[in-house]
Length: 411
Image 1 (tube, rainbow, N blue to C red):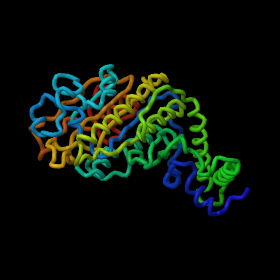
Image 2 (image 1 turned 180 degrees about the horizontal axis):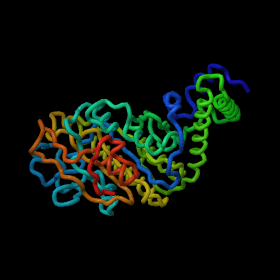
Image 3 (image 1 turned 120 degrees about the horizontal axis):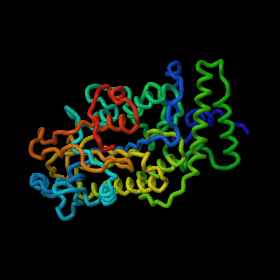
Image 4 (image 1 turned 90 degrees about the vertical axis):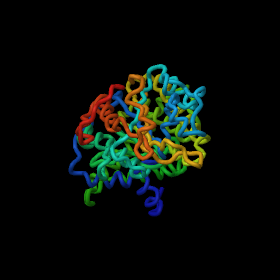
């Protein structure tokens, strides 16, 4: 069976497996060839972190609601959630009524809410603020992400590419690193070669595999490219074999976010030794029509995370899987004329799992002592990262974050 040059160039060279970001992965690994050595500690059964990104700047004030605060109602005459609808956490703060699932986890002690999270001199640009969160450096442009630095630290050089996995259409800057190579998977259902599932397609895939893993010592970095190609195929084989171990009765919400979370559950069940998963969901830029849009978004997040936690409970992985959710910034205190809210600053983070010490952490920002109409942050987001690194992943947060930040006690 022959494979045309055009087919190889368009399907083989550009795609090893649907969803694996091979060209930048390969280029990065060749560039870092001389620095890569050793194996990663950990492995199957190790603690796992799932990072959930709420893209667009979620309105934290209408998510974790200061319902007893008169300033809340004054600043939001149309958007304020009535007291009778708020899912109360205490006498002053409650959750959006769309978040019944997360309220249930809070009541069970499996949800921690970190209030007033932000950073000094906040940036209200989506792109720059997300970059700050992903690199953990508000002061300068960074080439490496905080998760990528962590993966470099634990890998001690090259290890399985499955130590970190990004779920979605685009690779996260949080995974950028000097040495770590992280696959981006766009759907397990389509994981494999871009050929039809028939005998002819199988044979073409086999030919491509032989070509991409053949010895090529005469080519610069040829042996290294062959080795990376082999590891790429091995990773794909492990995923396909491992996800067959997943058996669940949990019903996830329909849509990309719920599907992505279930795929993470499948990969966790596969025991591939993945330490960090990353997934994002978008739509939170609610400049208008927020009263209709945000509850739908929050319900999708709440239902998805609740289903995921139920799945972890069912497979006995709850105590070794921790999930953290964040958005790049919150919204302004006062609603705008379009029935929405504009870019703001501080918001909250959610941390859930069987090992979480549930409750409220940090102080809710003042709604009257503002910075040009915006909330003043009370908890540096790097303290949350430091807690996850030091107390959950067993890393040295000072090395990863480039400074020392207070650990919180949610885990």
